[in-house]
Amino acid sequence: MSPLVGIHPVREALRAGSPLDRVLMVKGAAGPRLQELLDLCRERDIPVRFESREQLDRASGGAPHQGVVAYGAAGKYASLADTAGTRGMHVVLDGVEDPHNLGAIIRSAHAAGAAAVVVPERRAAGLTETVGRAAAGALAYIPVVRVVNVSRALEDLKKHGYWIYGVDERGKHLYDQIAFTEPVAFVLGGEGRGLHEHVAKHCDFRLRIPMAGGVASLNVSVAAGIVLFEWRRRTQAS
Image (cartoon, rainbow, N blue to C red; front, side):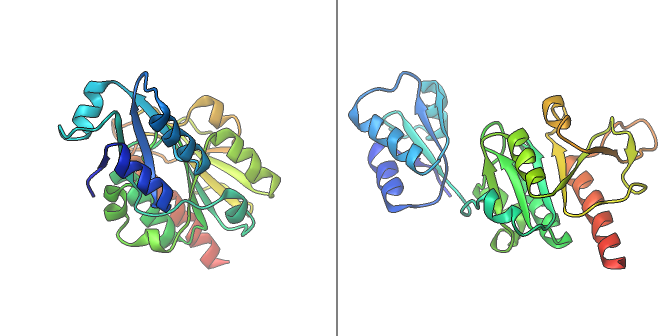
């Protein structure tokens, strides 16, 4: 899926309600037409990122962009208020940026029986075409929720009775030796840095996967699969 380039194509996509993942605008953008785009993005809760003109030149592939480039979404986002009410298992991602990892996690989450996957609005992969391909059809079956603030989303889940389990190499509890209290939400951090501490402090428990050898951690999509299917194994057994 090629990006939409230029004011008119982006404006028409916004007016038509086409699913958009994010809109890029040149820094210092001004004028009534660009302001209209900003207003339309706010109405639809579509993130806007301000970038340099050089970055927009690259994003547009060299095509004339008038200071605006938009990326289509492979699906529509759901509401946390709706998914939390199901009391089904949630997978919350704290800044997973690689679209292949996000797609693989969505696929594993659906296969394990999750009710939803939650992603942050910024500094994270969204529902791009690459994510859709990596998810291998799972996007048609599992809601993906996009939130402004992950910590606030965890507190909202707690208000619905959820117990929050962070998956973290510094975790105190082994993932396969702790009891899960339903309903559950599993939180995984982004590539390289793991969970942000300000997110981890909202977890009721922090779990780790024991590692052999000199490697300190697993790819986040692999770690997600291990923990989610441990949860599924136990729920199936009970």
